[in-house]
Amino acid sequence: MTCQGPDALASPNSRSDTERAVSTSVVFLAEDDTAMRELVASVLRDAGYYVIEASDGGEMLQMIRDAIVDDIEKPDVIIMDVRMPLHTGLALLGVIRRARWNVPVILMTAFGDRAVREEAEALDVSAFFEKPFDVDELRAAVVKLQLEFRSRPDPFWQWTTQGWRKATES
Image (cartoon, rainbow, N blue to C red; front, side):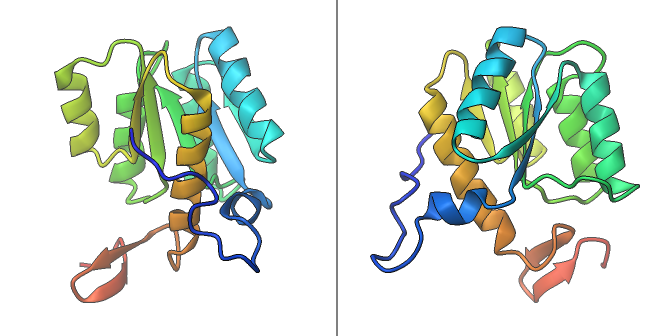
């Protein structure tokens, strides 16, 4: 994955992209490998993000439902492992996209064959990382995607040739 550094777009007299991105930013993180989940969560928390963790696909599904249906805690970015117990990251990405929720989703996997990547791309994954990866690159991707997401008028809106439209409109 290629991303610009977090400060690449900052003007000399403004706060850095990282500072703007992390203020009150929420990241949902689903990873069944405890060591990997703790590492990613630690890197993001050190950068100032509020990270809500799930240890499997079932917990993440509940977090997604709460965010969509009950309007509880809405993330700015979701990071998920592809292979997890109960629900895969790909299945959960499908749930998110069927709800017409345009939140950025990053998938990570140690089993990134071509078919997995193609399915993720068909579901409009925002970024795809193959393990092992550089956690600083993941953090930079979160900053970049979160800034792009915040520039949209609403998480359930999408850009069309006619301009911004509610994703539920035809």
